Structures are given as structure tokens and as C-alpha cells.
Length: 136
Image (cartoon, rainbow, N blue to C red; front, top):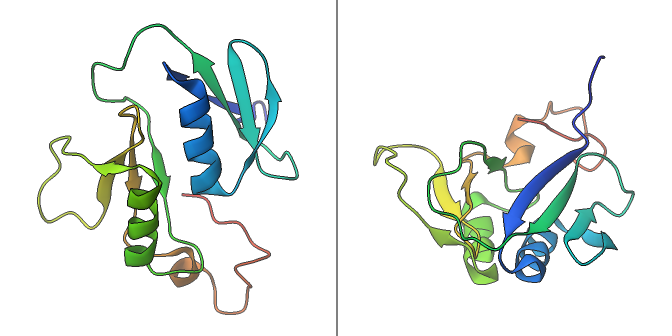
């Protein structure tokens, strides 16, 4: 494999707010921090990680890259409620009204989607969801 996805960068006016939000969403933790960048990752520090980078300007247009999330161990409705409680909000980016996913934004407006089917619906019946990651 010539390249490997190592880090995804998110620009933020309030990097601690965004890092805390994504740590709560993903069950991750802060693994490194300096004055300009907060790095968050899974507890085993597996790749990819997320760098939340301090910038002076706010987001002004729709993201050209975004995360697609799946509920894991709960229903999609339960996960949607959890994400909204954590500070996500529903957004309209021009998606048709009959799509099967929900478009959301983090506290600074970075869009992401919650897909309709949870992880467990996509895993082969003989493989445990706790031992096999599922990528989109």
C-alpha cells in the first residue's frame, strides 16, 4: 500500500470545543496538544487520528469532505438523539427530503452524516461487532 490515511484535520475557532465534541461522539481521547493543534484518537492510538487546528476564521461554505457515521450498539434513532444532545444540529445542504441519512453539523458547523443502518446490520452474522471494524 503506497499511502495510509494517518490524520484528518479539522479547522476550528474553538478547538477545545470541537475536540471535546468529537471525543464524545467517537469515544476517543486527547492524545497530544499544543497551542495550535489538539490531536484526538482511539485509546490504542490507531490511525486515523484527528487534528483539531486553531484558525482565526469561521467556516463559510459547505465542507467538501465530511464524515459518515453509523450507530454502533444502539439504534440509529438513539444515536441521533445522543449526537443532538452532544451539540450536533440538523442541517440542510441541499439533500433531497427522502434520503436515508441525516445531515448534521458539529458545534462550529462542520457537516457530517449519520447513516440509516447501524454497524450491526452490515456485519456478517458470524463476526462479532466488537472485534471487527467496519469502514464505509
